[in-house]
Image (cartoon, rainbow, N blue to C red; front, side, top):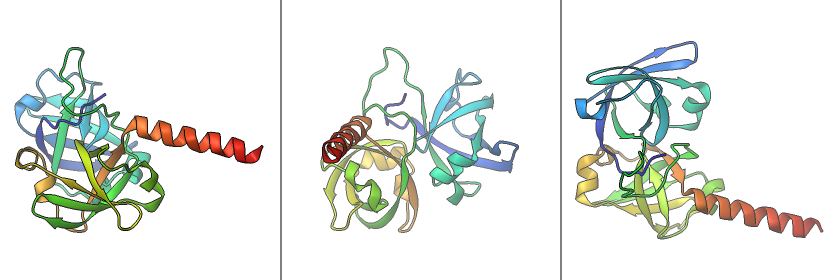
Length: 202
């Protein structure tokens, strides 16, 4: 589990084809990899990946086909900036909200006005967007602002500290980011849909 509080940015040093799909080498400040064990989970742009090799200032992760298809990772080139968060440990402060690192879909940046970013997610995911609710965006725990006008469109308002500590400030219009919807919202929406479907069938 993760909290959506990005601990720093790293760089995609290399991506190579592997039997599983791809293997990435991700490098950055040594504190991001300190005491990282092989097999540990790390959120990379909000996607939970497993460390399969490491050194003082880098780690390697494997990405399977489903991960590449579900995320925006296929858009990235070597040198890309990546938000990193190590997994939550007992006793750690939960400064954001609980995230699993399981990406639901991608959203595209369609406009930026200063510190307000407007995104468009696929319309079929719009039912999980609730104004003032939580959303995991590129691994960052954020609060949803206004929704619409079209289904799947939403905005977030970012403070300067978030822009300084993450890769979001480098986004350009048209760029995609990984999205994880708040799990309680997903559970409530899908439970209500199932109940209504059963009642409708009766």
